[in-house]
Length: 130
Image (cartoon, rainbow, N blue to C red; front, side):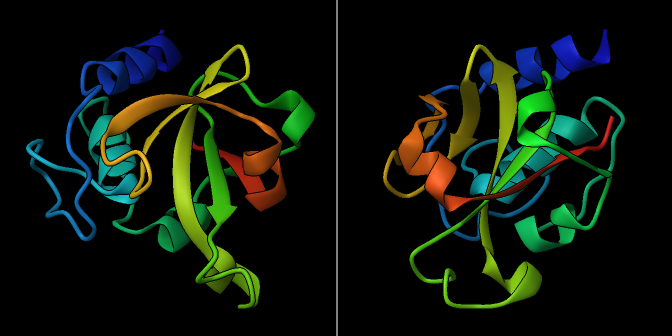
């Protein structure tokens, strides 16, 4: 099943270092959107390079209906005062059981995080691209 392959591919990069504006199509470092772009690409799904562009893909999914492999989009401290898609500054892959797979500066590597209240407050929306 494609959803399982997406998650499995993403998990294979646990611990890969975070690097803002990481080059696409390589696996030595990732930022959040180069990570999702790469994981989906090797599984046959093409995504644009940054999180705001990725947010324009797929179908909106209500939070209570998210499934394995859905993309979760968030605002950041630097972007929360902006409007529309300019508010988006982070993307993660939902992996089930209230957990998400992503990379970001605070963690400095690809990691699994729980979708806590901290993340729920920054949540913009979920998209299904599969």
